[in-house]
Length: 207
Length: 206
Length: 126
Image (tube, rainbow over the protein chains, first blue to last red):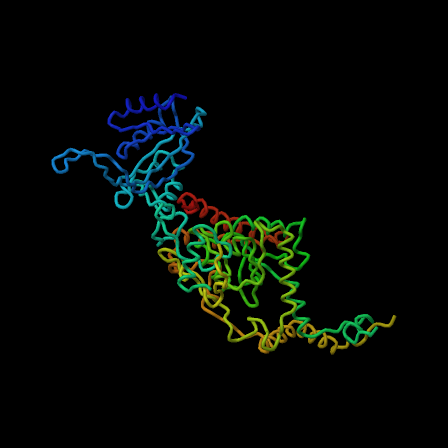
């Protein structure tokens, strides 16, 4: 198979308006991935599937990632009382949700090529285009990500919750999910469970 | 050495069987315990194995797994009880005819097991329905299920027909149906049925 | 051996009484048992129709496809045909040529009806 740089160059040549970044993985597995912007991911996916040199006809896995808001300290030059100084400021980088597709080719027996798509933020603008029309096997996995992360897939044929029930409001795999407070009986608590079991005791729930 | 004065065993030694109505009734019931046929997770594989030729639960009179709650005496909760599944299990239990018994099979059915702090697993089916026998294990071996069945048979055999200590199904004021939880926006509501279960009082050490 | 001249009719009555008693006796005993020991505990959930565990939703008296009724009528016609055919087949050897011809006309009409229904697409389920 071609290297990811070559694939990226060919994707950009085929879809010139698409924004395709190379995301490097520094770990020993070195599974680098391609990040594509929301507007053009469907066209890029079709190219990856139909290009005779790639023919990535099998989407083996779809995953969600929750990137929460994070703060970063930056040094900014400011003019304070007429003197230019270097001041340290904290700024908040808004979080987003990311969907990761692992693609293989059954016809040419190669892979994986990893595709990433990001939402704008975590709460309101959580839509990405669905790739179920490209790879039929994504249907249930995208439903699972909709259920557990709250990513909205535009163009999905049947976007319903998969594991949790209809009427459930939360998205349990998000980093800020708080599970229900039912720690009233914990015979062998430790770490976080111990804290929550003690909170129950402090409220007088259990002696 | 004093001689036994038990007339039943004396007569039995002479080849005469004498029994009471209660013992006869319980003897019949405990040797025809028909389980409800449903499995929830991997424990169900062991439950299936225990009905097959190698372990053969039929020897204890419970070979007929019924596909309908109306014909079953015993509910074997075999596996992980997810919060999505709880209302269905309690409803099936409510639909079973009295007398009805429950075996909670495996760590998940007892307490949630390895998934206890998960977002979608109930922390033990005994929060909603009265459990007669708990089997620990992940999953329990078929021998353990057969042992649970024998324990249940012993329990049935000792149940009183009259008097204050008679079991639930013989008391007119005791409930036969239990509260079916509702799936709410964050959790099943209520998180447990206080008529059936209350948190045991253990201090959280650590 | 001397043949039985008089069959004792009262023996039949005794056997009949035993047969009925054997069937009805346990039912009566079970009823007495239930009235004495086990209280009745009916309930809404317990006596609901469905036993799959899910709460029933929607109206059970839903509409059937109109196609089903055509299919059912064709089935009924051939069901009635078999009722006519069985006595005909049983008495086949002792019947006259006229009866054979009558039956042949009857079967021909039915077969014609079948071909017509087939061509109209009644037998295609969709």
